[in-house]
Image (cartoon, rainbow over all chains, first blue to last red; front, side, top):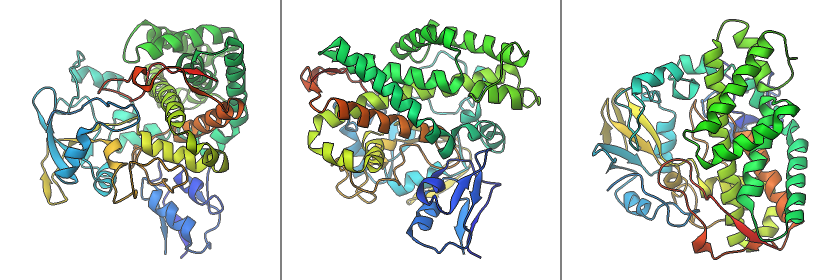
Length: 60
Length: 390
């Protein structure tokens, strides 16, 4: 439950980090890391979900 | 209707886009060789198609739609293919080799150096005195400095690299300058690989120390990848700087917004200018969209400048509004091929507009707008000279 990201499909575009820097980061390989999985489904997280070009992010 | 068409005003899409839009979010137009292709003007439809794996980016496929005559045999393109021309799963494997060098954190760390580059170039403008050509004296040399640092061009070769980047800017698709840059990169890769030069934090070092050493890339593939990144990066960077500056000069009432929220202003400039317009794709399976049926073998063109002026996605789309939320623009594309260098170009553009208009608040065009040379229909959009005074 909460915020999750699929690193298998992540292309390292970094949209999530721009949209919700308090929830997402990129590791040294450029792939998504969720730093606050319990973060509420707020506007920033919804932006990240919508803007991710690879559809790698979800909130459930 | 023939496609593509040239812009008449450099910061507005071709007037014919309005006619295409009238025909619906997806319609048909004719390429130079008579071939009919789908043209997508709707934002939602373009966004969806950008992330549809049934559209191929493989230019070496003979059915791939061409926007202009090319002397290169499509099959020969296979030999120089990089991730930008690859479909999945090959694309992801290759893109992942470089994506770590373009993260938000890595590019933000470059910002102080980019700010210093802008400051130096603006100081030089002041020394030269008005009128000066901002395209030649700021847009192109700034892009050259950024890419010299990204690729780790040694200080002793910086002068020559900058000269070559200036020549390359005059003729981006071919020519001696690009070949000479390629040769110098090839030498550098060999030096790094043989331990005759010290590995650092730059892109060439990263690719030599990783994929080349591990046998995931040949030296030829590594070189092709670097040249692809350099050519598209340079061309998009100097064109975006030049055209953004012109647009802000023509909309001087926006300067206050620019200072208040430069991050939002950058996104709106990216949307409004959409300089990497007319992205071609090839359908490799049937796709149903907006009541139309795209067949395998059909060409599909995604004119980003049309999608980014769709009133359904951006109210009053033809108005430049530097404060509007524009992050959902498609200027960098969408889907797995979305622009790798997007954060770098954001930093460069923001540094430029802040540094330039901060130092020269009375900057203005030195010639009538109608005398600014506009680029043609093919390739990255922009201008090739920008005479200014202050």
